[in-house]
Length: 344
Image (cartoon, rainbow, N blue to C red):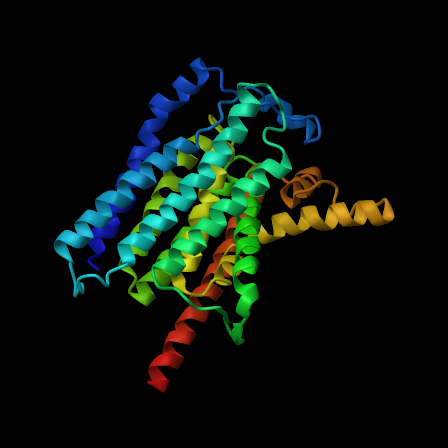
């Protein structure tokens, strides 16, 4: 695919997201959609009380418009050899984006209840789980309908493992785990946006290797949107993405990972997301079984905050870890492609 298409998509997503902040942030302030900072967090976060939330709409708008424009440009100037009735790439792209938007809707309901209804915890755990299971199952059903019938997962450097009848329930749990892990990462100014920016670039590189033009557009649009949002979200944040934004990013990361055909890459490239969730799980298990905490506070970014790390340091270190994980992921896919070519 011509480099200029990805360039246009990235710039468009960046500009729409960055410029939309001039309108959306004042609008959120007028609506008094300010973040409520819970007492269980670091005490110094209290000075962030009232910062507008639901700013995720900024990069959702930017990535959506840029993806549509990129897809139109791709089909107009690089039609390729499309076989009538057999071209499902566009439908799979649509399915991934719709899934991300549905997860965004769950996040929006959570934010709305917190901000407008003044219920600090938003949706309860059961409500979230029911919505998320339905969305994940629906996404997998659509992929099946579009021709993805496999029950195996290819593990980089290890090989293929067939999960048979357990594939669907395992993938539903995996999708929910990743989406909520991305959501947990949004706890320090600029952290979730920065990590997801690096994740998106890693997937972009993989899609270029796989010659998957549709999803390279999606990943570069997401990267541009995250970068545009960081102009407003780096410490001190002028706006928070809220669950509205983090749930959308979670759904998008899942869509990108599934599109590669190597689902486990999501956990490898998004290793920070995994660490965030595991830190919470381990903290809860440790406290309930021994009465002691492993970390000063979870998710793990708060542990480092409580250890004296500044927010910028956390963002930089976590992004570097993601960058290294992304390189490993790209090498893994490149190795798989080389093996396939040599066997062929």
